Length: 146
Image (tube, rainbow, N blue to C red; front, side, top):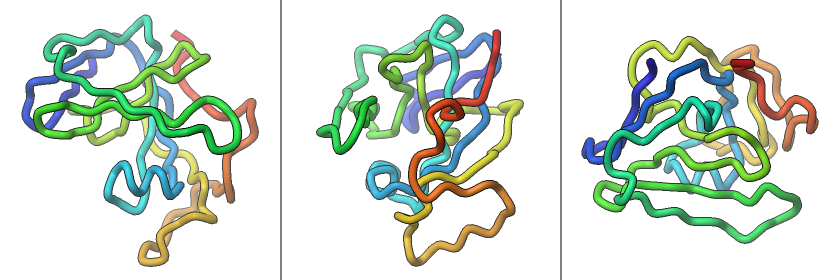
């Protein structure tokens, strides 16, 4: 069982299953949403995910569509502002940032995306595959088959 939650601990959730691999997103929107050089994104199957506390404390926000679906969505705790998992429209997945999870995730980072928008003050220092923008459609999520 994988558990996670927000900074203040009022929003909690658990995942009974595996996670996708982590993709490191360098898009400007992800930089703004995290306050960092990138967002370490991963997902779990919606059917294996459940809120255990504080679901009523979640606020959701959707940015205007820039190019193509799905829309850019973020969810956060209304009390502390921590990012929390959010549905990925048109899929069977819930997306989240790796930092909201606890313990051994059983997964690792496997690529960088939107590297042409990387912060000029950060240098990618690993050998992972890099994509200037989005990866090819058929490879957007790598992960659990159960």
